[in-house]
Image (cartoon, rainbow, N blue to C red):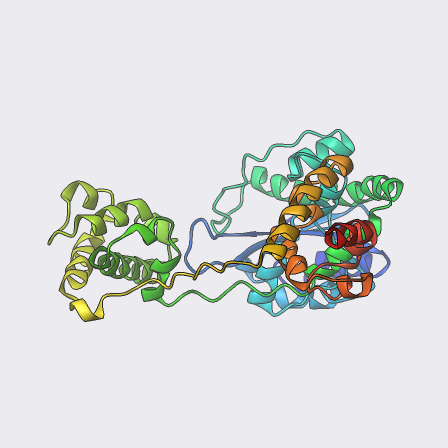
Length: 375
């Protein structure tokens, strides 16, 4: 096993740059530690080249991720990912790298009509290979990496360039290669990972929070803020400090001191007293200062617009079955709503609907306009 690259002076890194400069594409993947740490990091980067070499680059052992900008921002070199969204957002957030010329084998698998689109299924369907995903949830921030982990990580990239060749054949046969290319182009504009929310605002996005009465909502806000602060202090994901359900139960009880059985479910027992303090803080908030949730007003759409939405949704079912594509891939609900509201009268007007993509107008535009024109 070749040692992971720890420096830009490493001979293997210079070899990687040389191979990439003479090639048309590289395959890339990253491993992070979001399951194990609050402040997530790029823990490992895997790259495969057309020369048949695969490399591990180890940022935790000194490799500067920014040194990959010369490759990843090169518009003439295709960067092949499988499920690129998170990797792109991670590299943009942690190293300010804006990746150009992306090909995502997961997106391609969807456009080929595959019912399973994970890497394991994609390698099986395209190349007849069987791989294990047993190390997928490992703590990639722990060192040293075992030989098993290194082999697993390299497997994530070592066959992707072969997959691209197979997928391109299938996509060209179906006339969908440019569809995939357009979707992949959109990945370049993805934002980096979002900033952490303000601790006392985290409670708003938790499933089940809307059912809490005002006092319980105040308690839950303080409990969630407490958890967020503790998680940041000890660098653990919030769910490893206490799970949402335990804190919801505490909030519903609205009791000073809390239900001991629920407190026992707080995973980091050293912090039980801080959660009790947070609960009491929620109990002591004045009635006029209790938090509220902003609830979206129900907007009654005009009848004709409702009919356009219903007609497009019904058409989408048939188009999905006919083309072997997921419903949301044919056209997602948010775009159905936009089209119904815009009520375009021509392909030019349909093309102006934000986010629609040219390939959808090309493939489905006339059908959609006929639906809209119906009385």
